Amino acid sequence: MKILISDGIEKIGFDMLIAAGFDAIDTKYTPEELLANISQYDAIIVRSATKVTKEVIDAGVNLKTIARGGVGLDNIDVKYAKEKGIPVLNTPGASSISVAELAIAHMFAVSRFLNLSNTEMREGKWPKKEYSKGIELTGKTLGIMGLGNIGKETAKRGIGLGMTVLAYDPFVTSTDLNVKLVAKDELLVQSDFISMHLPLIKGEPPAIGAPEFVKMKKGVIIINCARGGVVSEKDLLDALNSSIVRYAGIDVFETEPPTDAQKELIAHPHVSVTPHIGAQTNEAQDRVGEEIAQKVIDVLKK
Image (cartoon, rainbow, N blue to C red; front, side, top):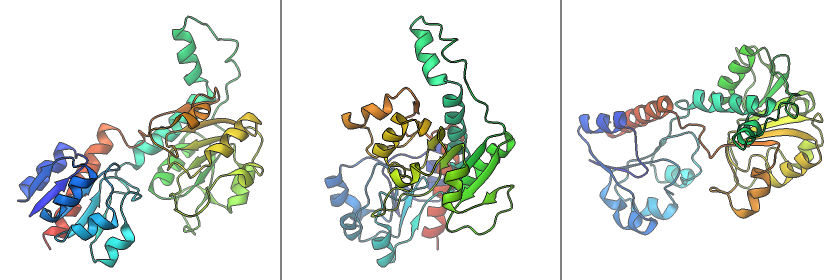
């Protein structure tokens, strides 16, 4: 059986596929080439770049599974694949620790002006006085929106830092963590920090937009390491400029790479940014490669 690895895979995962007796081919097709060649393959493994559309699924007459090395499935037409009887696999837990650690890193960055002081000191400045009003995370209230794998790991780290942790998740009714489950509005009103870990649902408004910002504490800190669009970028910029939001840490954007229209938000002095690297650690990538390879092997060996 032939497996197309479209967006790369860690060596540990590739070696597992070969050892299991599969013909694993690591190559990158253009969208047109993918449509022309997908019929050769029994499985496709993607990351976030390759789009597995309805057309690709129809052309993949031999596809027995579609696998995504990562959490989100935005780039796969999951509904249509299921209608065709093709299982869609992903690795929801493999990168949880790495994304959670980045969310906490952004909290520290904006609380202690790390993004600004790094830049200014390299310019020969000594902004000791300007950045003498940092805040501690200890004793603050952290609101987690979305208590899935990543939300739980973020909550654990918040608890370890001495934060009071609230969580809102419409699908979670109980937890064994030292976390208080609350309604969305209560989380918005009570939190000093809000970290987003909800999925992006197409066709629905952002989980955080203008109606939510007006309910928040003045000076709240927003962290988004979930998906671009979960927080409205336009409304976040307005909230930063009106001081409703004191700082924001952003790893994901509505358009990636960002366009000129997003520069004002990215360059805002109260914003810490990273280029969608939440899952990009050596440890996470090894876990992703190993887990997705094993899942594909299990399906194809049935």
